[in-house]
Amino acid sequence: MGRAPCCDKANVKRGPWSPEEDTTLKDYIRRHGTVSNWISLPQKAGLKRCGKSCRLRWLNYLRPDIKHGGYSEEEDNIICTLYKNIGSRQSLITSLFYVIRWSTIASHLPGRTDNDVKNYWNTKLKKKLMAPATTTPSKPNYLLNTNSNNQIHQQLTSFSSPSLTDPPPLTNLYATTPEMDNHIQVSDFSYSPDFGSDNQKQDSNLVYELGSLTSQAISNLYYPNYYYFTSSTTWSNDNATIDNGSGASGEEYDSLFKEFGFDPSSSSDYFWIA
DNA sequence: AAGATTCGCAACCGCCCTTGC
DNA sequence: AGCAAGGGCGGTTGCGAATCT
Image 1 (cartoon, rainbow, N blue to C red):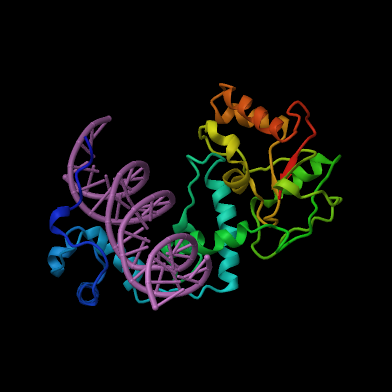
Image 2 (tube, rainbow, N blue to C red):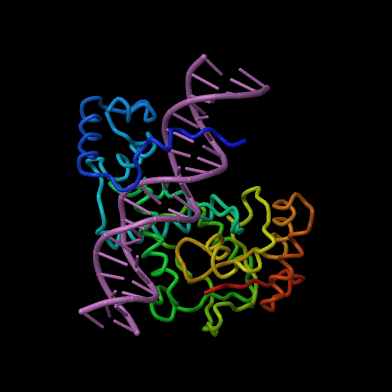
């Protein structure tokens, strides 16, 4: 048995708000101040709308401090950075449980609403960010360290409390210029501190998510073209934790990494995605 | 010019969380 | 503790506008 609806759907108006309705709602809120009960507001204000609809209209459109459109480059950067950072912290690598807190991101952008930021991301920024690295390389195409795994691990761990404006240098990693074909190259192995921090279940479709959701979840903050995965050491542990020790997900990982030529039995391998 | 397709975004849906009883 | 109601939020939809063919 489902939850009772918040209003009588048959007797409320739906669809776009008219200027008259906007005025009615704004006038009511101006006269009464902060709304303590949105469900009862429509009746009091004389609106044939669902209370939730009124709340949404006010919060996303009618509030006096709302900004619409015209995102600046700085705002773009903040959204992209927070998307990566918050996304990787609040979720895991599975598509089913991957949830971005748009309200958290919007709270860093005065005048922007979660809905607005979400729409902006889905229609513009996502495409911009997902565009092939060859067209807009934000960083040089290198980040490989074939024999100082611990060094990478330490550096990534230091990202856990990052500054938004001061990315750490990669100078202590020695660089190569790997082929970037197929967006994935397997070489050595690194570790992302955020990976596997949540107690969430594995999705058997994970193997198909590597290039998108997975990479988002494990990307680091400053180098959006590069993504790190857990090592076999940490990774085995992560899997056990994530999957309540069943070990089933470990097999999925193994097959996933083997698919890209990675040797799960190696303790020193990592791979990156560009 | 007109039909098809894509884009942008306001609005809705439904689930989860919080709060009060 | 358990329940119900309201609030909050992410995902999705619908539709008008813009662009393409």
